Length: 265
Image (cartoon, rainbow, N blue to C red; front, top):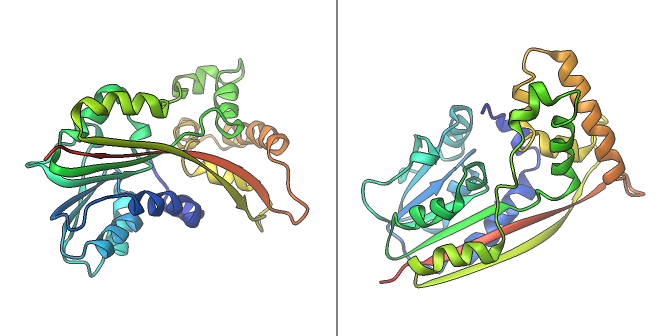
């Protein structure tokens, strides 16, 4: 997929807050090696380097535009390396003390196999820390699938529709418990207040355009009329589901799933 770093970073505060909350729960005092799996723009990578300045940190992403932004964000941090790699095929040359993944693994399938495999890349006594959105049953996400599956759009967009990629917290605990010393799984719903936009776009449409809408909009690349029509259908549904408050802002509840697993020593 083709990512737009500027679109993604428009809601930087809302996107960073879950990463900060996850980072606060990592139980390691001084990991020597850290991997930021799905590092995106590098803003979380920079937080990892600030917390553990003596660690060797590698940011992995499969988007060159995102990595270009990450290089700028991590400039001047000599212990940070950034690599363009396929997240689905990633394996380290040697076990690492911490694998940290913020809002990335939901793009990959088969979590029953994926999470134990990634945990297997963690060294004895190390930790796996993961945050993923769990908002796939909300109107912001179900509206996308409904429109793409409709008679008007299914030929062009139906193949982009996915089942909800993130499982229940209980499933992650069951999948990881046999491989780990301890597994802490929880979920949080953030009541995000999105400010009204100067361009008049609905803020939820703008928020989702930087993430879940990306593969759908890619299929309409080069067809401005179809893109406008698709976004118009989506915008109409979103306006009904997320009306503006009296001050012009919009409340956008967003559920997140967190996992912190520690490895046996």
